[in-house]
Image 1 (tube, helix red, strand yellow):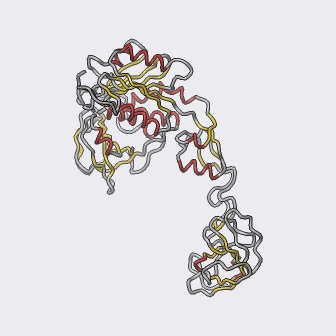
Image 2: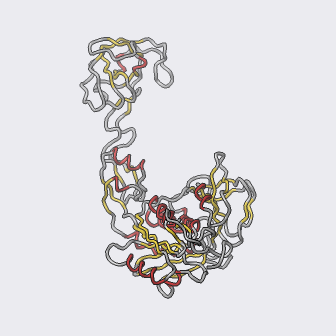
Image 3: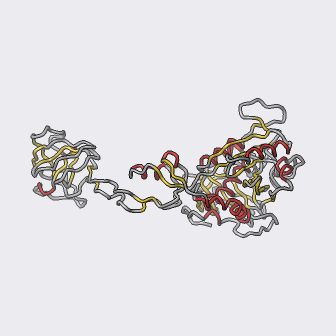
Length: 455
């Protein structure tokens, strides 16, 4: 197992490697840095490899939509427009704890430009009506009356404004039939009008929208309990290598703990993908073939398999040895880290082979596969992309798209975290962005604008 970050990624050892300042559109991740299909280095370009991944997975976009509960829908993409069955709010309601009144009952004092009464405005005395709590169906408000009303409660017929209880004299809720003095209020003061948020019949979410907490909250508020979504992907993650040990287990000489399984499976699940994991703790190609055969047999097979490790130029590259001569191609991309890649099918199931170094594995997901799934299936949502200035200078190899880990500083600059090596798990954990340096750029000074993907 030979090679280094200048030439390619080792197996799994922890020792390998133009837009405006606004979010990009859904298809933007398919373009951008390294836009040509050729590469000055002679290696396959990133856009060309994405195109091959897209062709491999295109059939997944034709799967029939499914109807699921809101709880099951998180992270999925809507299969059809979501139409509001009713308005939000459903009825006029109070924005404040206070008194529901008719503005016509006031002898109007001077008002501020916003329509609210001045603190020194003269007050009008009202007879107190029955209190209205949230959830009540109130009786109509009689002229000259003010009804104590709680936030969110339905405004009674005959009322068109709310005076906060803090402005009342006394500053309290007198009992029904007692008197309260209130400053004048304009129509609509502290009233949430029916339909002021969402009008019934309006399209509130377009097909393809990824359903996160805010979107699910909107659906729930509209009374929608089930939605039509594109089916989630199911992916099997197969981590390979004789040097790997289970996290929590002791290490024999020469062993390392398996970071890839946890790293990649977590990334997939965060993206709304169902992930199961398999660990192959050997370099025997026959064992890997057996595991792949079991995974891709029968009705429970995943939509795709991702392997990590065994794709570089070493003598014991189990993935290459196992899949050589089958419907899987291996290539080196003009990208650092994450150069060695493989893709094809195994028993008719799409198979994607990532390199074994943890950072290379994660970069392969973020730069190659995640954008393809976003474009094909709508989920996961594309990463937000910015152009921001570098906080420090950097160097990059000629002919390769270099992907550096970074932090976005409060002043909007991108601060690099760690070096370019693909073994730097600590730096990866401390980052929240990726800096993409184009193939034809070898040096950038501090302050230069760079493409950044927020992760």
